Length: 394
Image (cartoon, rainbow, N blue to C red):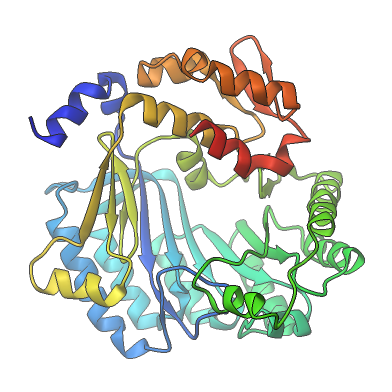
């Protein structure tokens, strides 16, 4: 029996029948690679953009998950990389390619990631003409010295101009921030939060600086070139993030995400709720029909494979119903609203409360999660151990 046939038997029909309504497209181009970045990107190679666009068009045309008719979608997310590194003309071609395969419902969320130094008035007009209605701006810091430290290419002044430009053209946007930068104090981080709040963005994402293996920051830290932020200080910064943003009227709806009423990221909620999605571009991973399909991470290999009439997909993981149920439980607990175990059972056919009884009881005893009837949610104390909770459950 083939793996695919086995997967169809193991994943209940209720789960298999969920329609794909969300799309992610990865644009790998950046002006340069920041020291902490471990994403699939191409740095300082804008001349490759036409080649990328041709490869993307071919991936969409030959995808086994797309058919002759337009796929109607609720959310479309353009990430990177820096999608707005493309010129206005290149962006027009990019959106034209997507429009041949995807049709947005009237109230769809259409997001693009942008950096402050690459967002111009002419590009804004292209975005609006294409139907983009949400911008995720990579601010990272409101201090020029910290931006230099993070190896970002923009300045605070450019950020302020970009935010004003976004506010003039979009109702919905998000600011991304990084904390726990080496040498950063709690007071400095608090002032940065207050600066972000002063713009009244509908959404703010805030992440601690991480040191992924293989990045330059990871190597430099291990060589003793600098020290990472003390764990206790990082915790205090995270708690300060929660207090300042919730006091300012933001709903802390996911571990690292805060939103004003009606402004949660609908696309990310698709991931966190475990619904299927399709993803295209180098390093992109789809989840559909109970399987996870991953494209090659190398942009060059991704393009080469498509140019040679080969599939860009290099791995397909068949998840059993229990594996998927455990994964959904772990992901669902990242959201402050938590997860309903009865709904999870109906979606997967697995009684996850029975399968994970020992783990769930241990986490409740630690005070990291709480249970009310069939509902589980992470506690305030558990927020500090979200990654550990996920590793225990999965």
